Amino acid sequence: MADWKFAHVTDIHIGSTRSYRYNPAWVDNWRTAAQQLRAIRPELLLVGGDLTRDGSLHDYEFDGSRAEIEAAGVQWHAIPGNMDTGNKHTDRQGALNDRDDIACNVTEAQLGVFRERIGDFPWTFVHRDVRFSGCYEIIAGTALPSAQVLDRWLDELATLPHTRWHVMLNHYPLFTESPDEPACDITSPTDYLRWYFAVDPAPRRRLLDAYRRAGVTHVLSGHIHCRRPPRTFDGITYCFGPSTAMPQWADRWADGDASLGFQVFTVRPDALDVEFVPLARVSDRTDGWGPAGHPKPEARHR
Ligand SMILES: [Fe+2]
Image: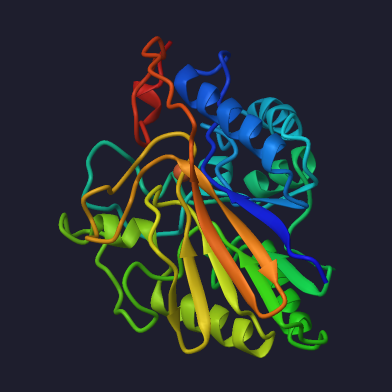
């Protein structure tokens, strides 16, 4: 079979001029990525969450994101990210005072808006003998009805015939350093970002056990906005993807690269190769508005 390609974009953060904050540079950057994708012509486009800037607050942002993604001209499949639907759950406030962590917890209603405006999840399908699956991993272990749907889906996934490659699309990485890393303390200023950026140990174990049973070979994630070279633990290769919108955590790892762009995978008879494609041009527009981060309601003024 001839080599063929699929692409992974994540954290594209389109946003809307109707919203209390907006960054036109991020839209410019997505349009550059879309133009590059039209030239590369992958067969599939995996969109790894954070399609919006504030979809969890403004339902209408999804419509703009959908139109922008479709302009890339590639068949696409998406999962939610935290800015689309809400963050990882916590039962206590974290160390950063500029946000209300409990109020940011992902809700069933927000997941429903994503389903309605973008599409259902989790999903799985086979394309040219490669299985592609996508789920919003961060709801695993919560009391949300969607977490029960995820649990049943993970069990069913293990019963499907295994393929040479099985690519799992997630938003949060399962870990920041290694699959056996311990829990992080949300109330610790030095631990907060490590808490924020990855799945906790108990749901991570549940997901990894299910992924292994389902023959997952690659886990693609976003959320951090800092790419790392693929790393393999116990037969599963983890690809931390870059954002197309803006960099984060650039100083975290010696091998980290927060450059903007996306990943293109080439499926060969005996290999699945990944290549980073940097944006051909990074927008220098500065005419956006609104605060960064997870502002409390009183900070969301136009
Ligand atoms: Fe993001």
